[in-house]
Length: 257
Ligand SMILES: C[S@@+](CC[C@H](N)C(=O)[O-])C[C@H]1O[C@@H](n2cnc3c(N)ncnc32)[C@H](O)[C@@H]1O
Image 1 (cartoon, helix red, strand yellow):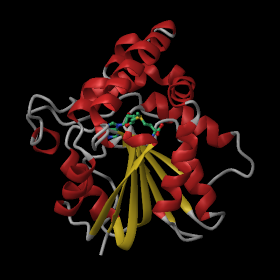
Image 2: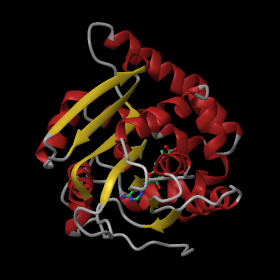
Image 3: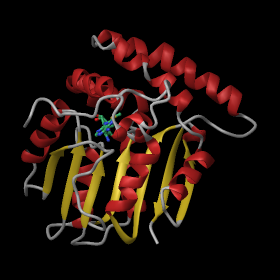
Image 4: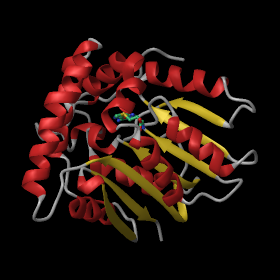
């Protein structure tokens, strides 16, 4: 697998359009995720008390792929959502797991190789803002904890819309800022939890700085209703945002007409 994936420069049209000084810089995100690859799964389980596994199953259910279908797991990381999608489409189906961080993809590939029978997953190093697939290719897609990290959220949603077949859905799971009357106290709890539990755990594994990015990334991530508007602007006919875990997590489910 290639060790480096060429990304557009900050000034280039692809990622640069939405780089407003707050958006994540793709090159930095790519090297951040490569550097946390060895501890990523361990920390994911610790941070969510294992709940990310449940939410990922919900994402696969919402993506609603037919047996024998063609599925996409975008920003697939170490591949757990792609493996669940492969279970959903069955032996006659096919899944693509796409990510730009080669070290995470290598872990995903190793995981799939240890499974018997071997799941039909193609791991592809690629940019979520310029997908290397034809229009109307996939029967459904998932995106776990990735939308918050891409350099251009509208472009990523447009790409998802482009590669989905008519009638297909994408389920987008991510950490979110809570909404409603209890939002201030829940957000305070979220910040406390990240600062007091997550960052120190990451520090013990030598990746403190890499996990300190989570709180600012949540702060700048659009709220659920804004995500719905972004999905509709990207061309999706229907989009619904479902808060999870008191709104600290959320799932955006968008359908193409
Ligand atoms: C927090 S991880 C999530 C991994 C996995 N989906 C999960 O749920 O555990 C975010 C992933 O998004 C990937 N990513 C971020 N921006 C990307 C982009 N523009 N193109 C491809 N992958 C991207 C990172 O490399 C990283 O693997």
